View 1 (cartoon, chains in turn yellow, purple):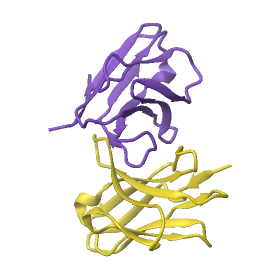
View 2 (cartoon, chains in turn red, orange):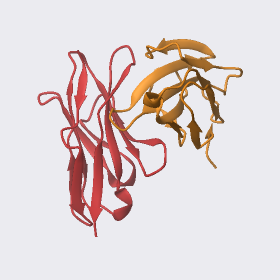
View 3 (spheres, one colour):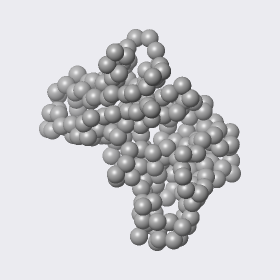
Length: 112
Length: 113
């Protein structure tokens, strides 16, 4: 069965430091993958998506993610975080039936 | 201006009562969805509609009934409310019905006492 695992419930990073949020998926077919972000007291917004091609995809606000088929991963990265990046980040797997499987989310805390 | 409007933002209900959560989208999308987010669970898909027709229902309980009076409306009626129904309910929409990109409302936070 397909699944998405975000192993870190919370990640704390200093402002200006680099960031990696981990995402592992389990799916036998060809996945399509998303990262969504939920800012405090708001709905979720799409950060980036991967369907095929270049395994590194660029998103909004300087975020990027790298798809690895061999590692079944889709980690999110940012070179230098800002306090406004504080939010909950969700990794999402789409299957061949266009069903979405959501990870449990990682809360990102930015230290001043 | 928000393109997906959910009303109300906050809702308090007593056990056993019935409430309707309102969702309207002004993005011209053809598909609409309901999701639930509770403290102890990840985001949970409930329903999807496309052109006002039910496409998928992942909610076990018949106490949850979506209602689509117009293409850009998808309300959620919840009957016989229980404390476990306490959660934030998000409405979302997409252009097509293949989940390529979802746009979410700000949610309705429901508390059942």
